[in-house]
Image 1 (cartoon, protein in one colour):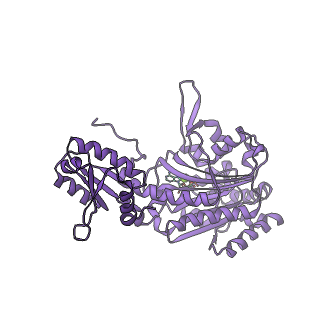
Image 2 (image 1 turned 90 degrees about the horizontal axis):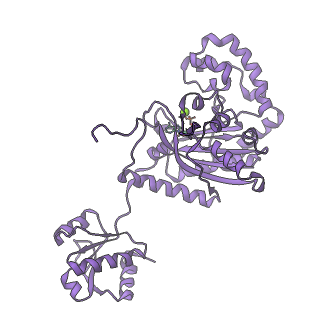
Length: 426
Ligand code: ATP
Ligand code: MG
């Protein structure tokens, strides 16, 4: 086993770490449920073609980051780098016209071949939400508010919402003509990556992290100045409605999502406490995607939250496990069987019950219960077994009031009363 290790950029999540993951997921899922959003699960593996068409060849994800391989049938397959293309495919394939309005979420691993660093992995996880068939600006507002509220519910501070609009296809073509002219003149001043994007995906140049490029771009034409009247109105409605909801935003005219199919609203939520990988949520409208993929023309908007970054941001209080409610100390042949039986009965009350399987001395078992901070203990030894009863008490050594109570294995009424009074079961 010496040299068997996980692949670079992948991580094991161990039980202690997963407590926080589970607590975070629980809060997120409750919020999604309250918003009437339903889950969808699509395969992790898809045909490579799906992502080339659904994300776009000129994007970083498709050109540099995909995990692609030939399967045994010589088909080109790719581990999904994001969720939207798969969701769109699944909807088209399963008959979108019979269900044209859908609010959906998904959660799971994504794969991108990137340089691993804090907040950036090769296998990471995303929670995504997609509103399919929704066109009005109210759906943009609802989805932004949802992302915002999820992050707030997790107690995350220092959040910044940045918004922009990319207009529709014709606004973008209008802008692009102008921008290309400007690029011709300014090409040599840009960094190499940006120069390479001129032919493939000029909009993405706005995404450059290069400081000099950023400075030069300050004088570039801005997409927002090329919007049609209708697109401009849509954007100002979005801002008005966010203001009514008291969701603070910043306009960032350089915010372009990398994917070809985005239209109108684009947004990102960043956190000041994340360091260089500051974006925790990215989203936007993609009215042209489903049609482009062969489905009926269907407006849609969605976002994805990176769960690793979300976990980094969520409060420490979510790291604490729920304590064991009852620790069952037991020893002796008959006692062990009675203890096993009782543990099953107690778990029916939705209590966390740990049955000690060690067969060790009572004092060792007590120590273990103590270490776990169990709220109460049950003791079953030879004497108890002979009397067909067990003893139960709150596990608080300091208190003398918590006297042991002996309860017969048959006497469910007394047991329930004790549980209601001491462990507050309902
Ligand atoms: P970035 O600028 O960080 O590369 P992106 O634009 O590639 O982000 P999206 O495709 O919008 O990211 O994905 C949405 C979210 O998923 C990101 O905001 C981030 O939180 C998370 N994410 C993306 N790539 C990774 C990764 N390699 N490791 C961990 N989280 C990631
Ligand atoms: Mg990226």
